Amino acid sequence: MSGEMDLAVLLRSMKPDLDAVPYGYGVVPVGAAVPSGAFAVIAEAEEMTVVAEVDVLSGAGIAFDGQWARISLTVHSDLAAVGLTAAIATALTRECISANVVAGYYHDHVFVPWKRRVDAMAALTALAVGA
Image 1: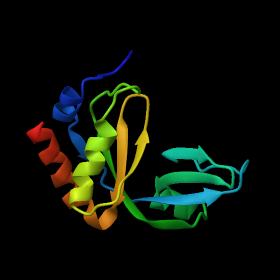
Image 2 (image 1 turned 90 degrees about the horizontal axis):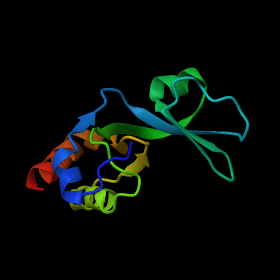
Image 3 (image 1 turned 45 degrees about the vertical axis):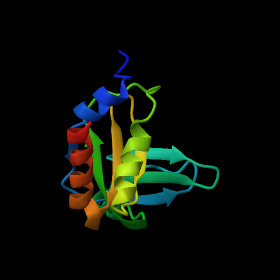
Image 4 (image 1 turned 180 degrees about the horizontal axis):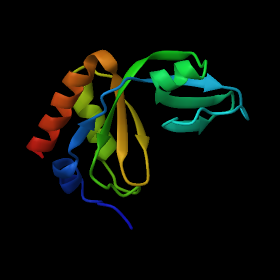
């Protein structure tokens, strides 16, 4: 079930998809319960980072930092593919948009500031069209 490795194909086929709800990054102690509905949980030395919709975090009593938009790249990228993250970061950097990329087995997900989500979608769509 390997995904696409060719960067040109990945860029042309990425079809960014913007989630309609804001996400947040919160932390809980290692070993603590994680709310159902969390998008990602990252075990770090200090605590566990929980990425989830802000309503999920708020409902669980987890403080979060900022509001982020999740843009999913709908192309099935191979985990060993080279250059996709760099190309995305470069396109968003040109627009002064910060990005946090989370790779799943099938898709990459880019978290950008909620207030810049429309600009980020435009930058990623332009990147795909220009590939």
